[in-house]
Length: 402
Length: 130
Ligand SMILES: [Zn+2]
Image (cartoon, rainbow over all chains, first blue to last red; front, side):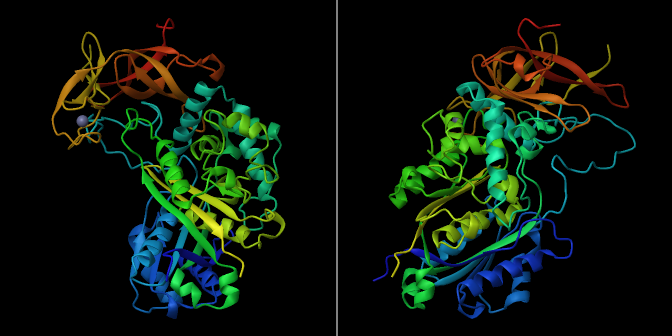
C-alpha cells in the first residue's frame, strides 16, 4: 500500500556565478545529469520533465534540454512563476506523481543572467516629438518610476523592510546583521557565487542602493542551474537500498499567491502569502517551526530575510530584530537560516533558486553537506517568493534510515 | 498658464488637486486603475471617489544609484486609500518617524514639445509645506 508520499532521490546544482563559456542548456544539462546520476537513474525511467526558467521562458527550454540529455517522448512542462519558478517546476513534477500519471520525474531550474545590473532596464529610443499621451490603465503620460515612488525590486523590498522597522522598532543595523550572517555562511559553501565575509561596519558603510539596503545587502545577478529527481512512494520501495537510504521525503509542498489587500496595488504584500504558505505547510507536515533543523528562505534583500523570520513563524510576532540579535539564525544557533549563504551570497539565478534551496536542504538531511553540514539535521524548510506574487514553501524530512 | 496634464489619470488637477479612485460599489475596495472586476469581491460596478490629501507615512526608502536619487513612500490616506509616491522635503531617514503625517503636493515634472506641463504629486511632511 502506497502512502502517497513523494520522495526526492536525486539532487544536484551547478556552482552559481557568471559562466561566459556555458550557455543555458549547458547549465541545465549539468544539473539534470547530476541529479539523474545522484538518483542512480536515467532519462529512460523519467516520466515527466518540468523546466523552470524566467528570462528565456518563451524558448521551450524543456524540449531543448531533452535534445541534450534524452528525448523519450515524455510530457514536458515549461514553467515561469517569478522567483518561485524553480519551486513551481518541482511542484509540477510532484503533482503529476501524486496524480498517478507517472512514478518518477525530473525538475530543472536554470537561469543565465550574466552581469545585467540591478536597477536595470535599457531605455527605448525616443520619438522625434514628445507629446504627452495618457497610456495604459493608469493613464500615465510618462514613466512613473522615480516620479511616483519606486516599483523596482530593491525599493519594494526596502519599503517592505521599513514598514516592519517603523512598526516594530527594527534598525538598519538589524538588517545589516542578516547580510553579515549570510556572507559569513557562504565561506563554507564552494557552490556560492561569493564566498567572502564582511564585517558589520563594512556592510553598513557600503554603497547605499535603497535604504536601508547597501550593496552587500542585495543579491547579485548570476548564472546557475539545479535539478531534482522525484519518485512515488511505491516506486521508492522498488529501488536500491542505497537510493532509499538517501531519499528525502517531501512532507509538505505549498504554493500561494497574494490575496487582495488594501495596499496591494501600490505595495506588493510579501508577507501574507508567505504566512499562509508556511501555516499550510506546517499543518500538512504536522511539523512546527521549533522542529526545523535548518531553513533556506528567500533573502533577495537583507530586509526580506528579516520579514520572513516573522512570516515563517521562526520568531514571535514583531520579534525579528531580537531574533537576529540573539544569533538564532546563525549556523550554530537554534534555527540556522541560509547556511548556504542565501541569495545574498550564494546567488540568485532566478529559475534555479527554488530548486537550489531544495538541493541545499536535501544535502544536509542526507548528512552530505561537508564543511557547512548542520549536524544531525532531520527536518528542513525551503521558501521562495517572487513579486507578482508567487510563494512556495516545502518541508523536507530525512527518510527513516533502513 | 501653460496647458497641464496629470502624470496619471487618478490625479485630478484644478483648483484643489486631489486623487480620485475607482470604488467598488459592492465592497468599497479602491483602485487607481481600471479593473474588469473587483479583485476583492468580484463585483463589476465602480464609482469615482475623491480621496483625502492628508495621510500618514507607512513605509519608505531612499533610492540611490539612479540619476536623481529620491525617496519612495507608501502613504495611508485619511478616510481610505493607500498610495505610493515620492516623499518631498526629507533628506535623512532619521527625520522619519512612525506614521508621520503628510500632505499631498503637486508640481510640474516635465514639459512636452507642445508646451504641455506634466503634473506629478508627492507628499510632504505636515508643517513642512512650501
Ligand atoms: Zn468589491
